[in-house]
Structure formats: C-alpha cells, structure tokens
Length: 355
Image (cartoon, rainbow, N blue to C red; front, side, top):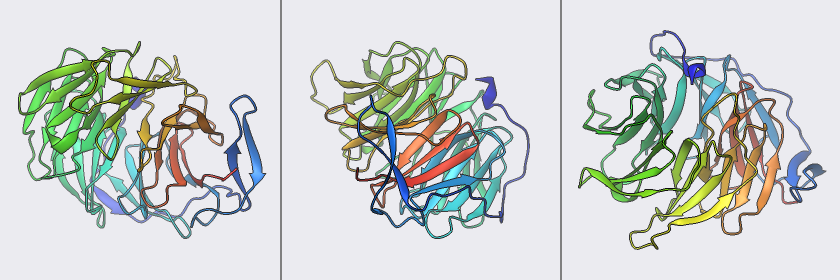
C-alpha cells in the first residue's frame, strides 16, 4: 500500500489546460464473447459524447478514483499526484479545474447530493470537503491515524459521510463539523465502506476478508458476509438498497442479498474476469449500474469488465488502458456511458456499443 503515499499543497481551484488523447470518431469497443475477446466495430452512435471513446489526460500520477456527479455532467478524478481534477463530461471535455490541498494521494471521492460539494479520502489520513465551484476546502476532517482508503455519502436523510482507514476504524462524519461523530473499531485495516438503507446500516471490509454489517443504532456488527479468500477492496450498494457488490484480491466480484429477511446464505453470485494483481495491490473497485442490471469493475489486466448482474455473463471486456484499471463507473445520466481511471495516469470516457 506504499504507492498510496504522497506530499503538500494548499486548497485551491486553478484553471487547467484541456488535455485530451486521441479520440476515436467512428468506432466503439464491443464484445461478443469472452473467448473471442474484444472487437473493434463500426457502430451507430448511442450517446451524447463528442466521440465514442475519449482519453482524458492531465494527472501526473496514478488515477485511483473517478466519479460522475449526480447530474452526469461533471467528472472528478483523484490521483497519486495529490490532486483532484474536474472535467466536463460533454462538449470538448475540458479539464476546467484542479483542486489541491491534500498532502497525500487522493484515494476515493464522493459528490454531495446536490453536486455542489465534493468529498475526498487521502493517504494523508484526512478527509476533505470541497466547494466544486471555487475549489476551496470547506472542511478538513481529522481523526484517523493512518491512510483513509474509502469514503461514502449517505443517500437519504441528513448528509453524513463514512470512512474506512488502515488504522482499523470506520469513521462517521457530519460535513459541517471537523471531528468525527463517532468511530467503530475493527482489528484490521479497513479498505472499503458503504452506507446501507436509511444510513443506519453500514458495510465495511478489508484485509480480514469477511464483510461486516453494522447497525448504527445498536453500535455493533449484526452479521457478517463470509466467502472472499483475500482482502476486499471495494463495496457498493445498489440504488434500491437491496444488494451489495464487492471486489476482492481473490480475483472475484460477488453480489450479496442485504434485504432484512434474506436467506442465511446471502451470497448471490460470483463474477470472474477482473483479476487483481499480486504485485500492485491496488484497491480495485466495482459498482452497480443505476438500474442495477449491470456491474462494472476495474481489473489489473488493464481492462474494464461489465457483467449482466442476473446471469453473470460478461457483456464487455474493454481494452484501452495501458495500466491497471483501478475504478470504473456508469453515468447516472446516460446508462451507456462509462468512465474509468487507471494506473496509466489517464481516464477513459466512452459509450457502450450495441454490438
């Protein structure tokens, strides 16, 4: 995890020159089967992007996190270079701002519900709350004693943040106050956290392999989700709050039934094809599409993998990056638009073909 370290800047938003790689204008990457591998085919345009595949360049270090805002119009990316870059999704894809302030690598990001604020987790052991328009740091959350690997924002009710750290604790934060509302302690580094239904349910996971399910009202673990055979590097809850997807260094992505009265064995399905790396140990992430029908994940084999949630079939295995793909997301605006961030220091923004 040493690659997540970094050094110091003061919070600010500075205009950035637009950087773009070569963008394909008439092709999109589609996949017919895993055995045949990816094909490049001419396809009918299916999104409002300027081109089917766009490379966004500007970071000088590995990209660890990438997010669309809740409108789908803005992209934020966090990097080993300690900066957060802001991009326009549509039009000329300008990199319109650089947010500086963290003293270490930016490992995870989340937009506020109104998309005017941005939350960040860093290897400098802090969380940042930023104003998207000005780039000013509104709040610096201190209290963790080691790298903060993961952050999540509650979806309903009062705005709250959740964090997971190498110090073994899970922090609960009010963005309006500097210090944590409370901490929940574990015995191992926490690599991934996620809010569940109503903000009262919390999921955490890390190097101890089992996913813990906490009830904030009871202040404790109510059950665990065993099954992974190595560190769990990401957690994401579906929009309907009924399912959880996890990504692990055991080379599997898994879905879980988190409904209150689900069967005792809550594992639903295993998904293969997005291997982790024994060398890099990056925190690869997986997430649901907004409608829950698909799962997208980054992979150490330099591809973005998309599965059909129900069947587990690989729908796309997309090339383009030259390094490990650490994060990948669906747009909340156009379900056929995806974003990925990589160790190769770039982001790829593209549309899914209909092949």
